[in-house]
Image 1 (tube, one colour):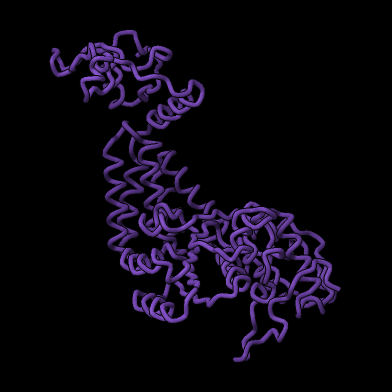
Image 2 (cartoon, rainbow, N blue to C red):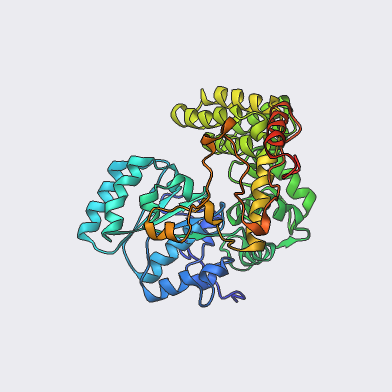
Length: 438
């Protein structure tokens, strides 16, 4: 009896034509939107993606989300439900030639859906090869990515695609998935499996359904007992023996980058380079590491050492050109430089305070004297009247008002307690006296 009204994707056999065992994640993959766990904001009743699929009018799209949340599954379901030709490419192994062959085929067989997994790994020329076919509707593109498409997908291609954000699966979704496996899977439904404790399974999965199924399968196959009883101790013992120490797409991906950033923020170059080594050894994307250092250079160092942003930006560009293994040296140079730099979050705090004012006060009017006045009508309305051009005054400064009346005198930027920003504080104090409290 199917308690979950769930269609087993591979009823024929757990082995494929070549005698290889089909992974549990593929055996249990949903075949209908109704069977998909999580992502109700996209595929739930009346949700936008569900309506598109039901109408048959599927746009080109980018599915953005962490691993194991249903990106590939959604692409397969769409192809099945709209009954259109479905082609798959992996950005890891495919090139421009492969893309052009699919496009050539699509000119003959209309309505082709092209699914590209890890589309963020396509370079500019590979993405450009898709552009014309997507724009003309020759293919419907479905790209899957774990990285922010704003950074990794060409703007021209991105503008022609809908971006749908997928969320990590909730614990209740993962538990439902385990129950489905035990109930209906061709292999595990025949075994006496009892999940006595599930905390370790859920924690190791980190919202990733594929990882959960892989760990479940690994543990179940490793336990030579009847019944097979899952406990947290057994799961952790087997996982620690057989699962890699660093998973660049899972929970440790976020834990280790967090440790890396906090070590730099805490001015510890030794800890920073250790966590960097963990990521390098795990094959972490060099651009991911470098991008986080660019952000940190402004958020945590800022004007205490403005050169930090220059170094971090150049690091991003350099590792993008170089790649592993040499990129590790460039990353190490940048990480140790940032860790040894004086720290200030004053610029970060300034924009946060200013944004808060905007949200609280709304769209305050620009003072007339600093408005642009390109036409005679605007000049007649006193736009720009009374504006004092700073370079006409001694020291290139004049104490006029630049903020709206409602918030004049508000201090957003408080220079940090470091030599460089102390110099800034002294200059601001000399210029503005007591107006901003410097």
